[in-house]
Amino acid sequence: MALVGSSSRALENYLSDPAKTNVESNTPSIASKVLTYLIKGIASDVKEAVAHYAVDKFTKENLYRWTWEVITKLERAGIAIIAFTSDGGSSNRSFMKMNKPASEGEFIYDTINKTVPDRKLYFIADVPHLLKTIRNCCFYSSCEKRYHNQQTGKMMLKRRLEKNGEKILWSTIINVYNEEVNKTLRLCPKLNVQNVFLNSYSKMKVKYAAQVMSRSVAQLIEDMKLPNTKETVEFIRRTNDFFDMLNGAHTQQGVRSRNDNLLPYRSVTDERFAKLEDFLSYLKDWQNDAECKAANVTVDVSWQGRPGNEESICGDDLDEPDLEEDSDPASIRQLSKPTLEGIYVTVKGFTGAAQFLLESGVNSLMQECSARTPWNSFSANKGLNVEAVPIQILISFETMHGQSANRDSSAAKRAVRETLRWKIPP
Image 1: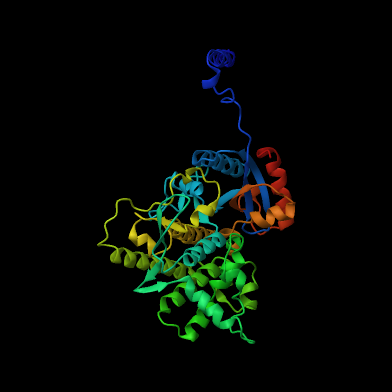
Image 2: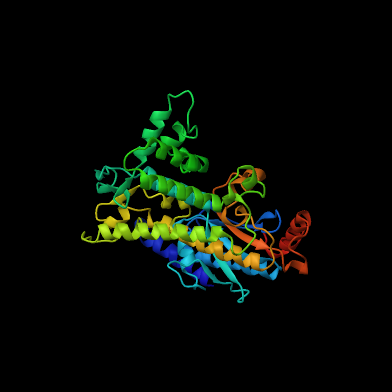
């Protein structure tokens, strides 16, 4: 009856004044995106999409409701959820802040699992995406102070990374490339046109960011003895180590590349946990240095990212190229605040999840299992061509049907499919 009454009133309003009545106000909107949840095994190669939600206008409230709905059904099916991995989009960050923190910290990186209160759920930002945003902050770092944005009509400030009195500029990378490009034997063949002179396409490629933010590039800058580049070398080296410590793909990668940072984690006392914390200390010192230099500058509005991003469904808003003229001067001298938040959450979340798993009996843990979103490879293998939000939920199989976590991965895959077939409809 309510539906009939509302329809009658809408018809009466339209007949009385068609110009002021929107006849399509009650028409459902067509979904433009697909929010996808995946699970990925810790002790197996299970990687399955378990839930899809068609969305048009994406909100943090919907993400909160759907995420805990999926987690609850997975837990009741016997699948232990350890961590939630996603990109650093504003909606994902807002979702994390909606949860009550289980541990004290500058940002929320864990919460109590609502289905299993004696276990925590850890939050982790997608590490390859973080690497791109770090590189992009460096790419937009320039000596130019401001310029006029013709689209908005506002004066915009250029980011100018600075630490301990030295500027970290992308022009240093360009100068190194120009010195090397015409040599027959190049000391750093990783630098090329694609990763030095970026466009909208190359900014999205993780490999281009990894090629520039590498130890070989840092070593070349140091060997060339360019003036005022000590902090640039330190920044690139620390970023490279941060990425490697969270990016191991298989057990032999570290051995073959002779890079200990890529080896599996096998102990809760692994020295890389301390190195990750040291990277946070390095960024905190940088933040304090930037705030100290900007202490005498008065601003009207502190920089909190671009307005209106609560409805963003992707992580592109982390790549802040421009800052408004009334921005906090300290934010201009350091990495963007969403990037710093993502790094903090990832280090704390990965450390907590990894140490929990190692203490629970997992013999070794590859970083790729917990710190990378597998959506790109998954969608390519499945032949999918949809605009989707890469949400990853990590799982372990300790409690599933009471079997061991180290059981055969093919059997684990079959169990997931059979268990979820009736628990979470596609």
